[in-house]
Amino acid sequence: MENQRNIILAVLLTALVLFGWEAGVGYFYPQAKTPTQVVAAGGAEKASSPTKPTREGGLRDAADVALERKDLQTELASGGRVRIAAPGLSGSINLTGAVVDDLVINRHRETVEKDSGPVRIFSPAGTPAQQFAQVGWVGEGGLAAPTASTVWTAPANATLTPGTPVTLTWSNPTGQRFVITYSIDENYMISAVQTVENAGGAPVVVKPFALVNRTEKTASLDTWNVHSGPIGAFDGSVTFGNDYSDVAEAGTITEAGKADWIGFTDIYWMSALIPVNAKAESTFRSLGNQIFRADVVYDQKVVQPRTRQSVTTKIFAGAKEHTVLDAYEKQGIANFGLAIDWGWFRWFEKPIFWLLTKLFSLVGNFGVAIILLTAIVRGIMFPVAQRGFASMAAMRAIQPKMKAIQERYKDDKQKQQQEIMALYKQEKVNPLAGCLPMFLQIPVFFALYKTLILAIEMRHQPFVLWIKDLSAPDPLHILNLFGLLPFDPPSFLAIGVLALLLGVTMYLQFQLNPAQMDPAQQQIFKLMPWFMMFIMAPFASGLLVYWITSNILTIAQQSYLYSRHPQLKAQAEKDAQDKKRSAARAK
Image 1 (cartoon, one colour):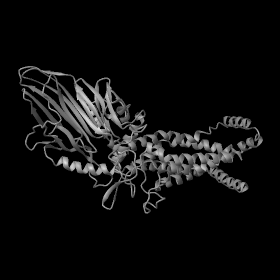
Image 2 (tube, rainbow, N blue to C red; image 1 turned 90 degrees about the vertical axis):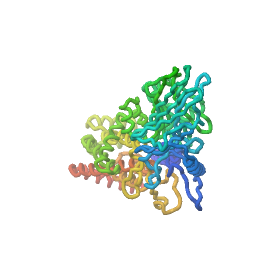
Image 3 (cartoon, rainbow, N blue to C red; image 1 turned 45 degrees about the horizontal axis):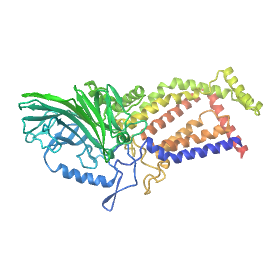
Image 4 (cartoon, rainbow, N blue to C red; image 1 turned 45 degrees about the vertical axis):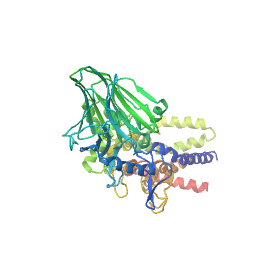
């Protein structure tokens, strides 16, 4: 009766966990269908229920989405812009203020649909999704310096490409000429060289600056294990400590140490300023109304008559592709590869990611690559699994002795445990050895979990049939008949085909394990696969593919080992019959 009460209590507590999982899983793994959460009705757009930030980021309110489209059309059609055309980025520079405020990432689509268009990272000031970069000067001693409303001059029909830099100029009435030369590479880096030429008769003092301005409305989800928000490297150390709420509360956060780079990151995208060989003060600021800014302010420059002074700032605006970030780091940007928040275990996660991408380069499908990765992991662990199986065999062999001890000391639980432990020692049996393969897989599982969340290389990667994005949950749910019924189940009931396969394969795997002596443990092992089915259903499809494959390989391995030890198979069948008889007697 006590065991039955414990089982009932465990089931009730688990049910509470499952019903609370919908709120919790939104924190660990966001469930929005699309970044904007927009639905169409009667030709007009309306918002679905209020949503949290997603791992994709982007506007989530339908009114903001519609206004963004309208504002972009107006802003970008007004003229006064220099076109940007590069393999990684396309867009334009606004000659009013010399602002880089129109950028899309050519290599990545907004959604999984192939015709959804490129991801937009920069939008002009005043639009709902505003994000832009700007360089300029503060004039000291009354010097007239360009402002945000200054209209710069560009060469006729100029286009910024990797092979054609663009120079913007503006002169003030006192003989100072201000020059910004923009250049761009094949990926996501724009360089801005700011020069002041003094043709006047007296020295002038200027303070160059650079900034990135953005709204929090488009931010991706910020969680305990994946950072989204202010980011930077200072004195060679990357900081993830501040989020948008910290900056909003403080108003201004000035980072100590030399700024290697500073900016804002989402899970997949980042905009950052990189000072080049110059001392600068770096600051995060809240401008109110969910608008934030990262500043780089250089030391004062004294420009003598008939001389010039220059500073260079690199502006990164693009996708956090690990090969691109690592290449920039090799070019001298300290710790730029750590903009991907691998965390403390990157020493293990990055090799798993490297192996996964290598397998993908061979087979051309990340789902198949995950299956091959699983097979490699299971192959490496096969000797460990054999030892675990040997321990399982030894456990089966001593079960009659264990039953005798349990009967002999059924009224003295402490003595019973002491005798069982002595039996383990006498027979040289480790009851936990069979669990070792599962424990050794946990780091691989966690590394794959982080890879699926963080690595943009996994974003929108299809597998087969209905699995169009391995980094997203299974889109087909059993409760709405795989989309035929017009409702979306809550996340803790959104059981997909992969989750069901996970539960079934785990159940079959547990059936091959030794029968538990304790009836309560037997009940727990019966329920565990279905609990895991509920818990894992909202996670990335790729994780479930890994676990299902691992279960199938484990079943095959155990079946093979049983074939080599027929006495164990006979013992397993006898255990199964004993369980059925015990259940019949209980009824």
